[in-house]
Length: 146
Image 1 (cartoon, rainbow, N blue to C red):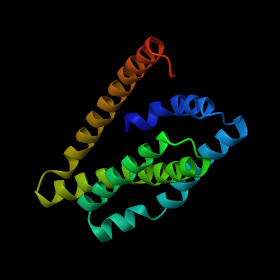
Image 2 (image 1 turned 120 degrees about the vertical axis):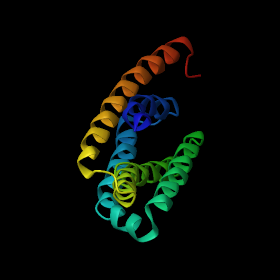
Image 3 (image 1 turned 180 degrees about the vertical axis):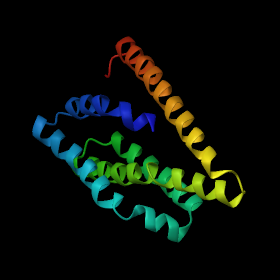
Image 4 (image 1 turned 180 degrees about the horizontal axis):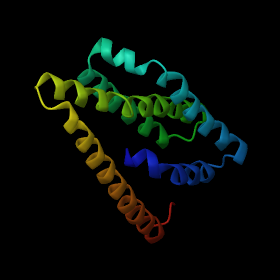
């Protein structure tokens, strides 16, 4: 979840470096958030239908495609990438948790222990997000975008 959390400012800088205006960049961000809002309403059901593991693999493929679009300066390609990123975000925030809960139950583990698992995951995610932000910012300052 860390890449999604810290990527926003860097994506804005990338789009600005490509020469897009504030309004065009805003449209790209709105498309990504909109796609996440729309697809988030049913992506969990789709993952249940195709299987949670396949849903996780679809997340990986969708996110990779989203990242690849960042290498083109074409607004339409970037727009497709933002939409794919929104779909990937919806998958990220539903499929893996559902997969964990299902596997936990299937293997007969105590369901009450899931609270500890999720709490530890959240704490770890927060620590990694902070450290990634510090490393990312340091790297960005040490090496210009161009």
